[in-house]
Image 1 (cartoon, rainbow, N blue to C red):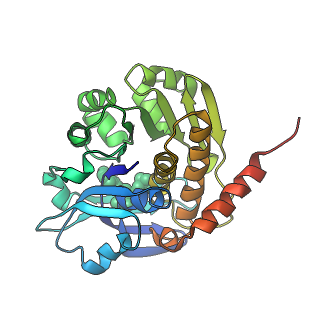
Image 2: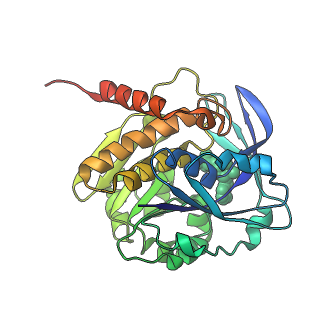
Length: 302
Ligand code: AMP
């Protein structure tokens, strides 16, 4: 089994009540790849500029991440800057500079075309579709993330792409916006008509919910006293979730439930420090220990 991700590899500037960083490695595919690589080999597809040094690229070294699909182009890497409110529950995007991402035309290395699992991180829906077309094999499991920007500006392209997706992983406000339904269960029913058979709703400090034809399963967010930076939490969740599924080679109900817990574990570690710093230091034993903690958090007797 192998897991392909396409998405942004970036430099971020982040400000939260806990501090400020002017330039730190970020990008949805970066968080996803690091989180997923604890469970499964990851094939990374993206683009960086010539400002992305060998020292920066070291973030992917020593992990099961194949960067043969990380293109290097003349110019600057994608840059994003955001500022969080006092309780970290609101975020303002200050700058989005697409830079080399503007002309990105992903071409998959031959060895990536047989990936069994695919995660289309938050990028333009037509780029997501062009990547998907290059992956062979009908039995692949495809998950997609998107955001209000694409829901509003490219609704037709997004609808086209969603027809080829198994699992849609978005947050609650995006779910409501895409479906025009406030109730998340009714929203899921609406979204199933668009193509995906499974909806994963990321709900920040309220945890996450998965809905499919078998029913609903919810996990809480891990209670933390001092989260520092929520950037990339959703992508780390997705990495833990898809990495676990690719690693165990199953997507039955039990596997999906465990994937939800591993997603929450990775998301919870990601917010403990700025940027991907906590994920960089994370050990597999810490993942297992927090997964056991989730079991304690949610177990009860009737
Ligand atoms: P999240 O906190 O899950 O929204 O992910 C944050 C990461 O997504 C940051 O590291 C950014 O570099 C990246 N990002 C922000 N906006 C975009 C965008 N429009 N397209 C692709 N990646 C983005």
